[in-house]
Length: 413
Image (tube, rainbow, N blue to C red):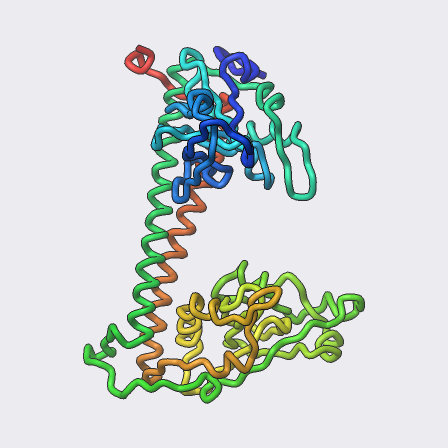
């Protein structure tokens, strides 16, 4: 049902749908290299210009394919979340084209506000339509220009469109500000880790004095015990479905620093009939295959796959300090990985890691400072998730007319 005072029209009646340039054409006459936007550049609610590539076209085609400020860019698909994804082009680069997997929608400005259309296409309403007519395969979906042209656009009066777009823009601004704060906090933490874990920046003890005791450089094997995990045969169902958490690298990338729950659980029989072993709470879990250098801390007793090394520090080494030390090494460790079908480490290599070791009390203070930095980042991430959730709910109401905005005479004029 169309709200009072609104219309519903197919997109083709109120906009021009422009397809983009295909890659790989040969034998071009009088070619020129021009910046162009790929699916990766067209994100949900913003255009990412971090990396803009160029494409060759014939010079006489430049006017035909060039984007204009106000064009609404939409992706044809890929992962389900890419359907209808897009934003308004501001003309940040001139000239600039769009690839053939990105549609440029040039609206009739007397009928439709570009920001309103971008919001509508990316809303639950828009995504529901695109998924209903998309060509699907496993985890992938795409639409063509014909389906986009038939998109049934809900059209409030222009002043109402502008007011809705203005409200949603305010939310987008709050979201982007929070995203920048998260990025800045991550960079600050990274710099802080580099300084604290190498002794370039010193902390003070509880009495406000420098910590006593010298740092030393030692091999990890001299201050920790290490064992790899194992995987019970998946063909024996009795080995799985018990109450013993079994950590995979996917669990580590999903949960981050602390792990207490896993996707799969072993039975005691599964544990006994494999090289998997119990790791006590506090064990450092270290990925040796695929996402090498990924690091987590066991919050409960658990087991792991053979792709993960369980590191148990002695009393001389703080678990949290080791976690941050290994996390700080990740970029270097990735380069160290043995090159095969995929980068990997082995237990011998990890045992020979050299670690900068301050006295235990200083280790604990360093870990505490970095833990607080993590908590600040986690708080910002929660705020970001809440903002996105609230904006999504508001979009559903505003863009379908379930909640109407008040437009004053000044805005109508």
